[in-house]
Image 1 (cartoon, rainbow, N blue to C red):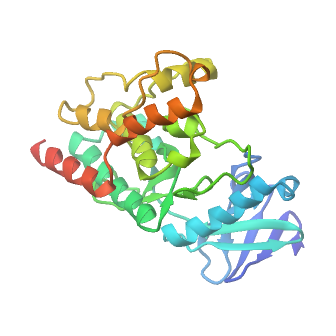
Image 2: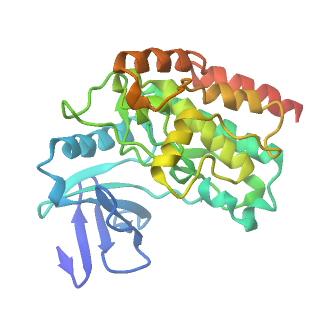
Length: 309
């Protein structure tokens, strides 16, 4: 149902008001698989996040797989209460709106100047707990990064104790899940994705893949910088695959070995194309074996050093 530039959506559990052309409602327009908006749930009059999937992708098996997997993972791994439905030939995914601050936004001076090392440790521990919920449900997030983590508070004084929420399950998958297409490639985010993801070694993806991404995210949280960034994506990929996390005085000394362990990667002396797939699997498996095996093991180490700060 259309009312001017406003659409009334009728989902499985509620109806929602979406103002398509209102700039205040647009969060991200024309993303890879969807446009994202801020809407209103009629029953509660609360804000919701509305993903409107691009119809041009509906006949593509890989994207169809991702739509359905995102709904399944959001339903099983989060408290976002997803509603997935089709209206007028367009698929929608509606989730709860979380009022808070993204980890990405914490780099802004208005927040950064008020944060202490203890706050960063508190945020880190709460992110680990949120990631555990996903892993306990049998999923890997595969797109963990500062923009996809929201701390549920707007009061900077409460931030170290506020719950963290990991959002955007668009790349989530179960361990051992094959790509939707025989020759399909794993999608990945520059900077945050583990080598096994970037090298398309789908059979190796497991909880340690997210632990790698979390290591990069924590490094960025403490430093407010982006590692390995260059003005050339191919160069960035090469550096990301071959170099460890940069040294930074902003990272506490007792945290540095933990982050390096989280981000263990294969030692590649030449570009990946010069290795056989079998050799890449072998080298990457060795690197993954050096990471933490679980979020619980990781949390225990972080808590110990946080208590010493």
